[in-house]
Image (cartoon, rainbow, N blue to C red):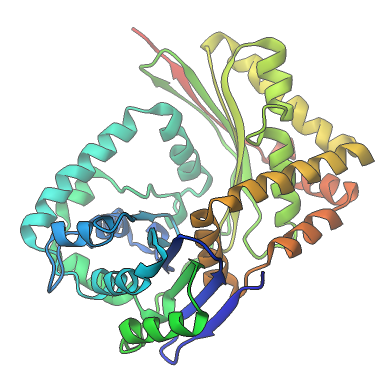
Amino acid sequence: MEYKYHTFSNGLKIIHKPVKGIVSHCGLMVETGSRDESETENGLAHMIEHLIFKGTKKRKTWHILSRIENVGGELNAYTTKEETAIYASFLSPYYERTLELFSDVAFNSVFPEKEVEKEKEVIIDEINSYNDSPAELIYDEFEELIFAGHPLGRNILGNIENVQSFSRTNIINFLKNHYGIQNMVIASVGDIEFSKLIKLTEKYFGCKEATTKIVSRSSFEQYTPFQKTINKKSYLSHLMVGSTGYSRIDKRKTALMLLNNLLGGPAMNSRLNMGIREKYGFAYQIESYYQPYSDTGVFSIYLGTDTKHIQKGIDLIIKELNLLRKKKIGTLQLDRAQKQFIGQMAISYEASANEMLSMARAHLYHNRVNTFEQNIEIINRLSANDLLEVANDVFDTSRLSRLIFESKTD
């Protein structure tokens, strides 16, 4: 089914996919994340995402959290390096209730000093918990080294010193500079006429004026490969291997996504899983990961294993990467890889909340969203030569970086 679009006079964009059903999904996404913070602001976007639920001009925390959940729905939010989202799943008759709440928390939050101080402790606990999980922490530390000295390299949670220093004034100033209505998208997948959705959105968002101050992002330009080992008090060692990848607008992005899925995607028959875990049995976990950003991207492979297997793991990873660089995959392999990737994408879209957030993100950055059928066509147009070209670019061993959290139990 085709997506429906509308842009309001204040710059707010809306995208909707009509779907008959009992449950609908809606989200408000803002083009603001941790890369838009200054060094002293690092962690502020994430903190705001927490605090918008802590009170508005007409609601206290309990009333905000209960507004959707009292009618059987679910309310949630998240922050990434480039966007912040508030979203909900709810019974289809409750669209107006949901949109009104989105508008209230986005524009009328009051950030009580007591709540600000209380939430600092919550976030500090979150940072400490994260630091206790090397399997998660290594991803962020790897990106910090990949994007050294650039805002993209900073942890979304920030650091404890910054979090402790944030004031209500800091929060309000950041909102004024970054939460402009023209930087927002409302996405919907559900059972509502588009004309009615437009009217409800106009009712709660149409009165918001576009701001004149738009903060531009500094692009990432200089990548220097590195090799680093850090001793960690843990029983398992952790390894990241990778380099920069393609941006969201790069035409080679889909080829890298397909290669990533073939190499170390969620399927148990991925090349890395079969060639390392299943064949040798020493990988607790192995997977590859590709994250595109506005102007760059990152490709990485993660391995969790016993310290004695780290070097063997590195050798086997490089072997798999070189196979993709030196040998063009066959027609049957390509067909199987395309079918698998398309199937996984279809399963993901079965969770309509995932599709709604994907729609919001695509519309935020590209002003358009490919239909599922268009995505299938793009994937099926990829040739073995396309994959070989991308593999020789991204998997070039001279460009690969390495980060090891080496187990130290004493």
